[in-house]
Amino acid sequence: QVELVESGGGLVQAGGSLRLSCAASGRRFSINSAGWYRQVPGNQRELVAVITTGGSTNYADSVKGRFTISRDNAENTVHLQMNSLKPEDTAVYYCNVKAFVVGVPLDYWGQGTQVTVSS
Image (cartoon, rainbow, N blue to C red; front, top):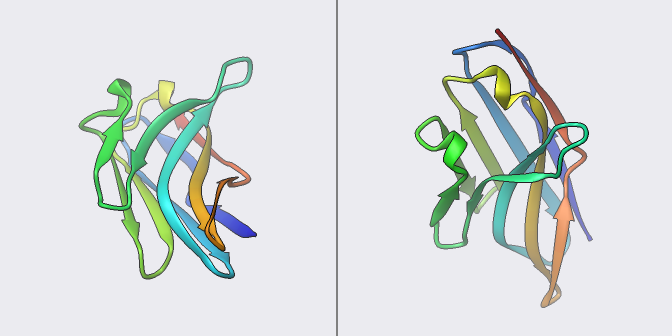
């Protein structure tokens, strides 16, 4: 079992920055890929950014050039640096980790952290 704890959400003015963090803990696991998703009430959850084991990244077009995903393999943490925030970035942000637990591939989600960008 892997537990994900997210932090770093909050209220910020348009043009500001926030840094989200996701810490994974558990026994006998290794993270494959990790990513951040976001969801607005009434809408589907959408991919924001993903990073692979090798460090390759992929971003939603709406956040390219403004958001940066990174990971610390030694600490089992994933970060999302969000700059030049816009009101349309307001959502609940969820950390997602695809991990191998005792060799079995499993999918885990964080509890979500609210990001609110005021205009």
